[in-house]
Length: 204
Image 1: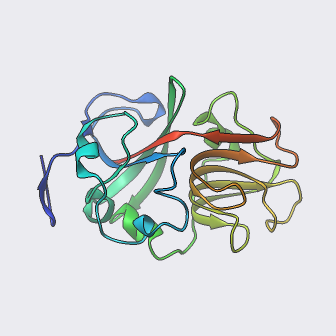
Image 2: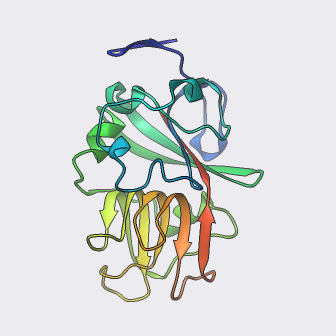
């Protein structure tokens, strides 16, 4: 049970080590299904302070989507991102102190991270594909008004970050908009891809 400004709610907490995120103590914030449109890039769920499917917040790494009050009222120093494709789930960690995930995303401003393209590809696994150039990553990363990601990396086959045709992350904007996973067209280093993943976001 977690006490928040919305009251006391049941929240899944991962108390043991998870992949590259390391030791336990992680609090669940969101679960997003790449096969659904609930958390598309333009969804109000990224910009409002309203929960979604609270019961899904206590069922662990399953296929139930959820957005918990921890999205807007839980400070942290690290974010653990996971993607499940088939029976394989992989995690990566971002060191980024913030008052909440809402504070990093809701205003639409770009906030850079520096994981590098190879680290982002790890969360997808051996199927991952990105173009070679640009590699703009972070929160609200964008190449233009519609090629964007709420959390992720965008790459291009040209040097300029204007027409990025490959992306890995959460809330990936069009073309080929998906909630979570990997889109790659026109020269991805592992071919064209349209991989839909089940996504998990936890903080500590």
